[in-house]
Length: 274
Ligand SMILES: [Zn+2]
Image (cartoon, rainbow, N blue to C red; front, side, top):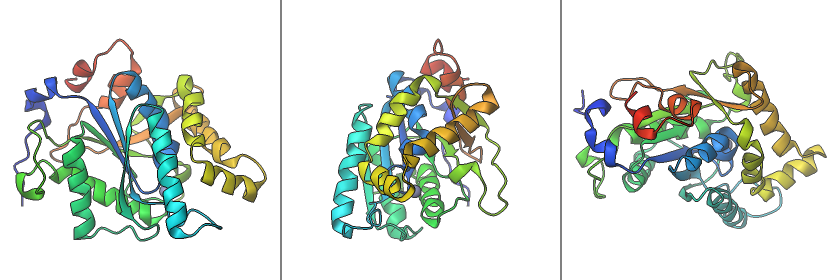
């Protein structure tokens, strides 16, 4: 079956659309770790930022019960995205139970109907944890389907089109099967915003303290910065975030993220129509 999705390049309506990035990842803190610097830079350019998680983080504590830690993590995620004027959403699935089911696909499509993103970032197809892989499927399905009229009962925004889709790094940047470092299509220099990114991540106090007790050092922030430095070597800057752009049928082919963030003189309109 071939859906009649409107090609991105023909959508002149995009010219007047508010530019919106939606990150749909598995757990509270994944977005801040994997693409927080890029989100900060997009917010600086006037983009609206939405961070969504499939799971509610209810296995993220060795001491608190499920409901207690989920409530704590919801507040932490809200605090982090508020630092860049964004909005947090949660699909409300329990940790380690994220699955590509009809119910969850509908939740993801409805989320995209409400947010109407220009750009979506999610996990790669293969990652260390199945919650991440299943969230990838949900985000990919929803990004393709949300503009199809019958895909949701929520109102269809007039400007809805298949968004640019990018995959952030897997854990440690490595494919979990081969162990090989994933080769990115797009590298975003986040050197100037690393401090702000660290402050966003530090909002996740429960996770930071858990790791600090376990490791006896601030491994939470340190590991994120080490990974950023490793990716920065590829583009000769102090810190970078790496992405692979999805270029399958119906998706925009131009590298919006790189074009937009490689030059502060470029407008969003010019980058979209590159
Ligand atoms: Zn995660």
